[in-house]
View 1 (tube, rainbow, N blue to C red):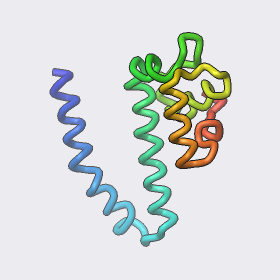
View 2: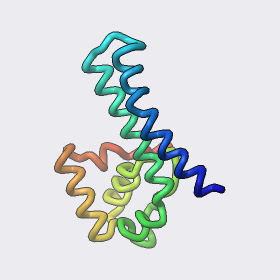
View 3: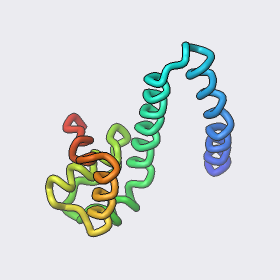
Length: 118
């Protein structure tokens, strides 16, 4: 039954996301580039937090040494965890590669993403 619920949730997301996007950006409020940017930022953070929680076993194995700060908190982004491990020098080779990619796209992304309140 849980498998069916996961499939249904994913299909619902795929169906509803474009409708929600049009509604929020073009119908509910007057269009603005600032609002569009905010919409995408909020969406990215929500997906990022979900990934940090849902894929914790994989990410902890691939990106973090055993003594490193672990992925898994739904209130924290993947980048925050990577930033803490970069700061503490507890990233694996794959973790260092990923942080370099993110930091190339957005300078000091991982360190700037650290959330000390989590």
